[in-house]
Length: 391
Image 1 (tube, rainbow, N blue to C red):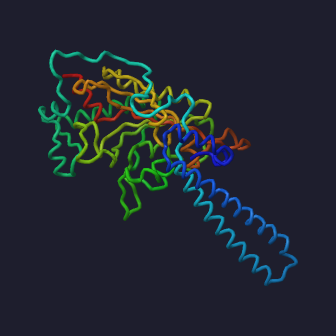
Image 2: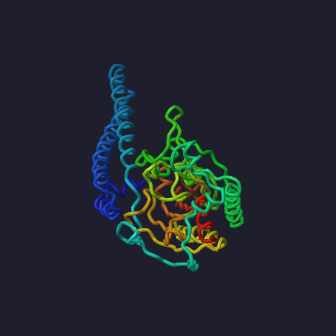
Image 3: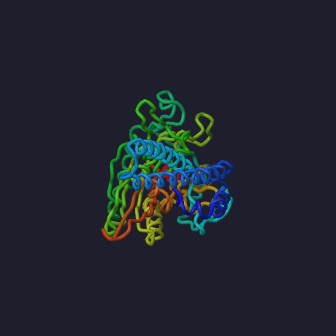
C-alpha cells in the first residue's frame, strides 16, 4: 500500500508513476476517487474529534437529556468515520506500487533491459525436440490423463518424471537452507486478508482460485504465505534480515485455458515452485535484492543451464513491485529464453498493507521493513529446461 500522506500531498507524482507503469485509466480513476474519499474521511474525523471534545467539556454541566443526545451524535459520527476509513482504505488498496527510478521505461519484452548472459546455449546438429515431446516419449509425462482428471493445463508427472521433480525441489531447498534461509511448510489455502496484504487481492481476484463456502483462496505463490508470516507483528531490528524458503504448489487461472498455445509444462494452472523471501531494513534492501538474484542464479549454474538476467520495464512490473528482474533460461526447441524466475523488491508496499513493522528498541519508533521475493526456481520449467538442454 502506498503511504497515504504521500498520495494526499503529491497526487501528481503518483499519477506520473501510474502512467509510467502504464496502469491505465482505471488506476487513475482509483487515485481520483481515493482523494475524494480521503477528504470525506478527514471531514468525518474532524467532526468526530469535535464531538469527543464537546462531550468531555459538557459532561459535568450538561443535562442528562443533552448528554444522551450528544452521545448519540458521537456514536453516529464514529460509525460514519469508520465507514469512510473503510472506503478510503479499500480504494487505496487498488493503487499499485510506484516504480523505482532505476527501472527502464516502456512496456513489453522489447523494453526489457538485458543485464547479462551466463552459459553458452547448445547448438545441436539436429532439430531439438520440445520438453513435452521428450517427456511423453520417455513415459514420464501424461498430459492427456491430466486433462481427463482436471481439464487442460494441469500436469501429471509419473515414474522418473515425478521423482526428478521431487529431487529438483529437494536440491533447491537444500541449497537455500545452506545459504541461511529457514525452510517453511505453510498452508496452501489462505484468507482473503493474507492475499490482500501481499497485493494479490483485490485487483487480481479473477486470476485466483477461491473456495467461497469456506472464505479461502488457493495460494498463487508461496510469496503470500512467507511475506505475511509476521503480519501484524513488530520485529526486533536485530532479527533482520528474515530469510525464508518454501516449495509449494501455485494455483493460477490466468493461463488462457484450452486456448493457450504455450507447450507442455511452461504454463499451467497448477505448478510447484520454490520461493525465497527476505524481510530487511530499508537501508539493506539493495543488498537483499542482489542476494536473491545470486541465490536464484546459483541454482541455474549448478544445473549448468544457460540463462540471461533482464530488468523488467516499468509497464511490466508486478502490482506490488517497485523493481523486478527476471531470470530467463534457454529453451532449445523454442530457440529463445523463457522466464524461470522473477525477483522483486516491493519496498514497504506489502509491509504497510500487512501492518508489519520493526524497531531497534522499545524507545524507538516502529518502521515498515522492505519485503523482497523471488522464485528459485519453478520446478516444472526447470525440469523442462533440463530435458531440452540435455537432449
